Length: 474
Image 1 (tube, rainbow, N blue to C red):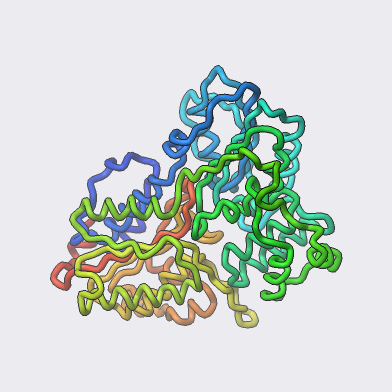
Image 2: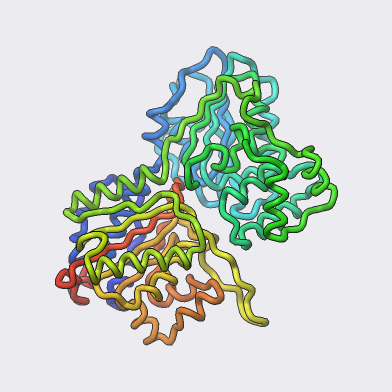
């Protein structure tokens, strides 16, 4: 392993589960990448479910308590529920999470909620079976019973139950094509809701007449409960016509009987005002904005000014990168609109429109965080004193084993030394293939939460830009 700053950074798995003061805060002027790593850790820790659930735990009901849910944070949320719920109070249920996303069980914690795993981002038979079982668990509930719904990002794929006329293979293809189309999350989930027998409020309606409390970790711009995991427990304001228009916009084929059902409104979802949702409660226990603000506070505690652009950024990752690069260059060159040194943070959910690889060429690897970093490195043009980290807060960028990547002032120079051409890698959406040889991938493993994109740019004073030796020694 080389002694470059990025290699030293990538050599450390990010411990997102330790206490906030487990390690000293790196000096940003001397250890910029480690400092950005620290901000990422803080953002992720703020979104872990235990404290959020503690603040919004419902009262024990007269009847029984059923826990159901889905998402990348599902297993961690279930463990938090088991830890917080009184031992003498009945508790049971079923939660589905992504393969490999079950955290270690705390010693002595009684297992009261079943957790199963399924595929993400493209659904599989395990997710279908979990959805069928979950619906069956809602049968026979009474007004004295309580249903606690633990919902987080990723639930759309993990909780799959195709609408009449659709096979699992159809749903897998449609889901894959949506992911590759560049459609934003609201569009994708509108389609998913109308082609499902459990999403778009249908699971919540099935719980009637029980009390229902939905506890959500948001991974979507705007934090709409109707969009998070395709809103399985809340009424849906979108329509069949909306879903059909999205499918046509992105030229995604569906079976003709399903198209006809969308045209007729036969696949319509439960709407706001539906009496089956009367008295339901919805609580956001973690959001992207909260995590960004936690990271901003950590930066300021280290004596660095911090500016949060937005937690709702959408658009093509490479285009969003150009905007961030232009801002960082302006700060570095002109101290406008922010004074140096500073940290610039943003969140949201960008998209990647996959390009068809050349004939005989392997398909690229990488997700939207890596794509952002690849675009950022090119647009920064080796700007001195600018360092960046972009990573998904769930620890997985797309379907790879990395959370994201980092960019340094010498990224392009090191790439040139290895004969890596960034434009060629971006043309085939291969950010993983570009940053891997540089040692610039951010690898954390699953974090057991998900508040979506985290992007941090550190802009130092020219005299504060670290010497290579000083930075690599960290």
